[in-house]
Amino acid sequence: MKPLFTTLSPALTHPAMLVFMGWRNIWRNPVRSLLTVSALAGGLIIVILFSALLEGMSRQMVHYATNLTSGHIQLHRQAYIDDQDLYATLPWDYLTALEQRFPHLTFAPRLQAAGLASSKDSSTGVMLRAVDPKREGKVTVQLDKVAKGRSDLSDNRVLVGKSLAKKLALKPGSELILVTQAADGSIGNAIFIVSGILKPLEPGFDRAGILMSIDNFQQLMVLSEGFHELAVHLTQPEQLPQIQQQLIQAITDLQQQKPLDEWGGAAVVRSWQQLTPMVANMMQMSQSMLTVIGFIVVGLASMGLVNTLLMALHERRHELGILRAIGMKGRHLMLLMLIESFFLALLAALLGAGLGSLAGLWLESHGIDFSSRMPDGYDWGGLVFEPVMTAYLNLTQVAGLSLLMVTVALLSALIPSWQLIKLKPAEVLR
Image (cartoon, rainbow, N blue to C red; front, top):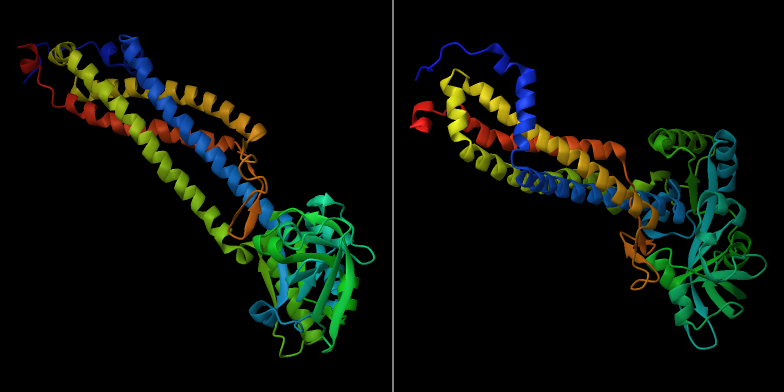
């Protein structure tokens, strides 16, 4: 149908006028507009808090996967990876050569074996882990995780896991007898003093782990030719792929200069992602999870915006019909409706981002404390986490989620706005 008036003032369809009209229109019913803004802002707050907790959990995973026991990179012989072969060691010359070639990296050698531990009351199988206290303290914090007693591996002193100490009724100062099959075929045995009880580090080590010095291990196991594991700490973790490749090349060069025996296999360099694949996969999935959940939550909140626009369209059909009758095109009305939607989404984004950021910062400072129910933390993916879940507010993610909300809101607004193009003035004004 042709418009009743074929001439329409250009000022009425000027972008500035449409923006002005859109802003005024959202306050024609302030209660409904505020409810819509609150629904959108509430959805954004939920997504921001979820993203902050997810980012905090991811950072905790990286921290515990690298700083607690494993380091950023580890070196082993292939036979040790496959079967924990006692004789699959790397020569001490390799450690000296790597420290000279990579002075900016920190290395910590370790030896491990199985044995039998006995106390006054009982005995059980145990895992022996030997470290160099000076080097280990620069790579991981496991020597600092002492629940009782003190961290002392001098003389014949050892640290034991908390669950193992409970099982054997050990406490700081208790005597512990270790018996094992030494590398030369003899029976290794010695009496050690428990200097401290370790907090849970890894589920397996907590139940059966004993930490001792390399000197004590070498005497007990009669094994001085090399070490089983070399943990590497990076000062710049973002350079891990490049450092790993450099270490692989360095190990290749060392194996050419000083070949290793065949039965122990080649030296293998693995990153913490390869050592704890479950944690690495979880981190890769976290961003996808955030995007999907963000779309779901914001999409549900946007349904409130669609409802608001449909009600406004129904109430203003007569008014919109008059605008169509005097010559305003349907695309201008559609643009006007989208501008109103944009203002509602923008207000919600500012409110949601502000309140969500404040809540995220509070969680970043205080965290969620589960210590009353899980005093020793919780294990997941082979790692033991502290019972306090902390958030980490990423402002880039906050901006991205706010933009996502505005985008989803505008896409939702297309549903009612599209009806304005098909609006017939004669039917509305009848």
